[in-house]
Length: 89
Image (cartoon, one colour):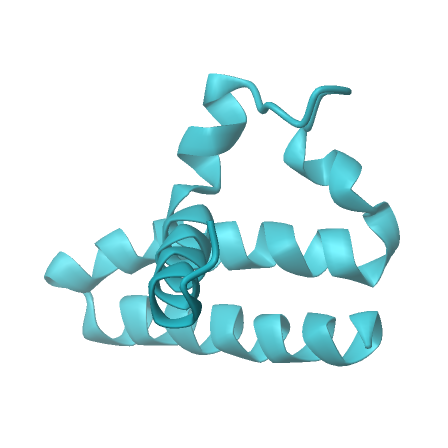
């Protein structure tokens, strides 16, 4: 499962970076989400969740949150939508 996830995130990160470089201009801003996705690839490929800089209590340092914000933001939106649709607390 982790290997498949790392491949999927690698493809998404690569496509995002390629698009940013090929379009240029405003698209350079997409390098931040691409870098965030590459961080997820590193975690899934074997570096473990420690790459996210999580503490024992599950919190993260601000610098890690900022660097991974594009991925984390999408994850938080999906979790929120799932909670609303399923009625979970």
